[in-house]
Length: 134
Image (cartoon, rainbow, N blue to C red; front, side, top):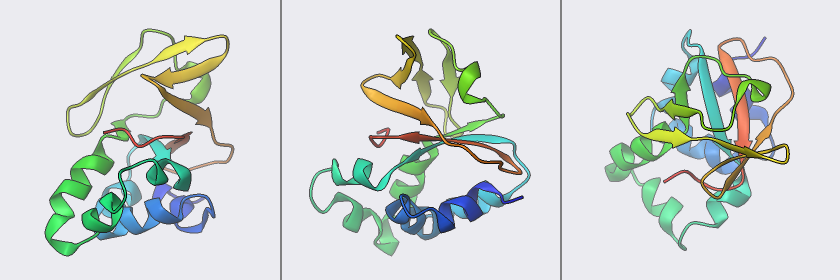
């Protein structure tokens, strides 16, 4: 069974995330025992950022900024998609609070849609987002 980093490495919809995870050294955390809940931004999510933002964050001198941004997507502990409840408040590994809303069967944090990702992960669970959590 693959860990979160290994899943990100091979998912064709997470190419931009893969670059960011490795450039920021977040891959080390996501390869560790965990468990973690990872809200993984799809490639299209990064396209919503201002033009040039991701290229800038991938520069070596911006590693800390990139790491902080990606840490907004990681929660300690394994929270399966069906366990996400309206009103949940999750705390990311860098201390940011993510508020969950569930309406008509769809799950969001703010205006960001969260979708389930099928597949087993050895050190937690991955959910997909259509927007980067900033």
